[in-house]
Image (cartoon, rainbow, N blue to C red; front, top):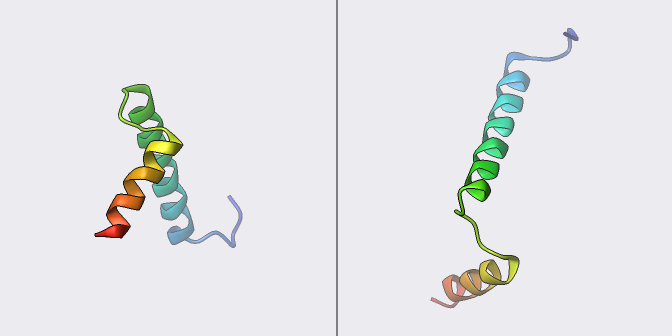
Length: 48
């Protein structure tokens, strides 16, 4: 492992990998929406 990597760098890398894995799991289990659905939801949230 390179000497210039800090513990914080490693922790952040692991954090990002875990978030990606969770996102992939959500997609695999039907917990996602299309781009158009996301745009519509965001539009409704911002208009409140």
